[in-house]
Length: 194
Image (cartoon, rainbow, N blue to C red; front, side, top):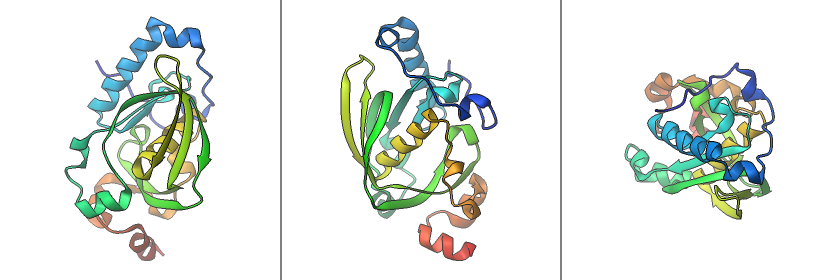
């Protein structure tokens, strides 16, 4: 059964999550939490979920961008976002160790701000160091949409939400995004909002 996704305003979303110990990683409780988070993310559906979003202040996130989520996007939109399928994986105690100086601007949403989205600038590529679900050290280079997902989830672990980084005039309901802004390049949206 999927977990309850906590909505903005709950204090757990605004605190820095604590580091997960090696002993905790091996525990049945944490392994079960990972599986429950995977199920919750998929049923939402979403492309990432951080433990604080389900009420656990732990530096733990799950990520997966399934090909089926790309069906409604045109090839040009997928290319512009640098969006490709990403298989399921777990980030524990992640640290972004490098960011590109170039940025990308796209609408971004969050399962903890259900029904809303905004334009959010993010680094176009990142390198992240983390532990996997077995406690093994990993380093991953990501670009495009995958880099955006990582930055979004790491923000959650630091007590930040996309609304802290958004271009506030672009904040919109998902319904209004679909009606007024869907498919438009970010620079065109910005010019219409001035």
